[in-house]
Amino acid sequence: MITLCNDSHSNFILLGFSDKPYLEKVLFWVILIFYCLTISGNMVIILVSWKDPKLQIPMYFFLSNLSFLDLCFTSSCVPQMLVNFWGPEKTISYLGCAIQLYVFLWLGTTECVLLVVMALDRYVAVCHPLQYTTIMHTKVCVQLATVAWGTGLVQSLIQSPATLQLPFCLHRMIDDIVCEIPALIQLSSADTTHIEIQMFISSIILLMAPLILILSSYGAIAKAVLRIKSTAGQKKALGTCTSHLLVVSLFYGTVTGVYLQPKNPYAHERGKFLTLFYTVVTPTLNPLIYTLRNKEVKGALMRLGGKTRDSPHSSEYSCTTVQRLAMLDITV
Image (cartoon, rainbow, N blue to C red; front, side, top):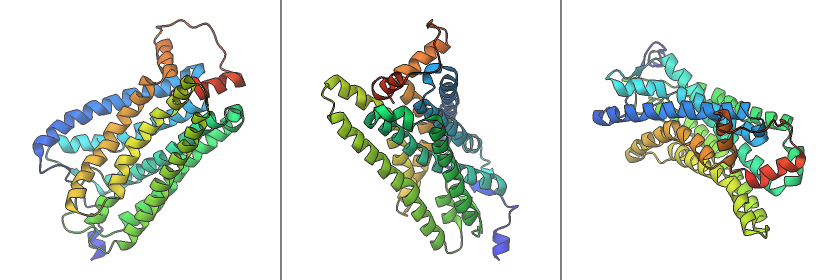
C-alpha cells in the first residue's frame, strides 16, 4: 500500500488559491512584476558590489551573497507559481516538487544564518571599530558565508528526504502555492508526529536561535551607541543597522508565521499569504531597502551609470577609512 502511495511517477497538484480564480489572475501579474523587480534589483546589487572598488568591504560581500540567494530563492518557486496561477493546469511532477523542496529549504535556511552573519558584521563594525579590519578580514568573511550556505544544505539534506519518504495517497493535492514541508506533512496519510517534532526542533534551532542572536547583537550595538556623546554620531551609528533590522523583521516575521503557526484552517490559509510574502515580496524589497538608505550604494550606482566622474582610486583602503565607513558613513 505504501509503495503505491509513494509512486514517484505520480504528479502533485498545487491548489494555491484555486477557490479564488479571480485572485489568481491578479496575483499572476503582481508576482510577475515583483519577480522582474527582484531579478533586476538584486542583479544591480551584485554588479555594483563586484565592480565598485569602494564597496570591496565585508558588508557588501555579505549583501551580494544575500542578493544572489534571493535570486535563487525566488527562481526556485516563482516560475512554477506563475504557471499555476495563469491557467487551470496546476500539476507539478514528483521530481519537480522534490527539487523545489530541496532548494527551497536549502536557501531559506541559508538566509536565516546569513542574516545572523550580517548582524555580526554590524556588531563588530560598531562595537569594535578599531579591530574591524583585523576581525572581519577576507578569509573570515568567506568562512562565515560558507558556514551559512553549508548549514542550509545540511538542513535540506536531512529534512527533505524524511518528508519525501512519507506516503502520499489519494488525490495528492497540496493545499499550498509551493512544495514546502508543512503542506506535504498535511498531505501524508501516515503518522507524521516524528517529522513534525523534527521540523519543530529545526525551527527552534534555525529560526528562533538566529533571531535571538541577532537581537542580542543589536542590544550590544544599542549600548555602544548610547555611549556616543554626539547626537549626530548616535543617529549615524543607528543608521548603520536600521536597514538590516527591517530586512530581518520582514523575513523572520513571515517565515516563523508559516513554520511555527498553530494547526487550524484559518492559520493555514493565512500561511499561503505569508509564503507568498517571503518568497515574492521580501526578495524584491531587500535591494530597495539597502539602496534607498545607503549613500555608498547610490554613489556606486551613479558611478556605474556614468553620472559622476570620480578621480582614480585604489581598491585598498587604510584601516582608518574602513573604520569610518563601518562606523558612521554606511547605512546598512
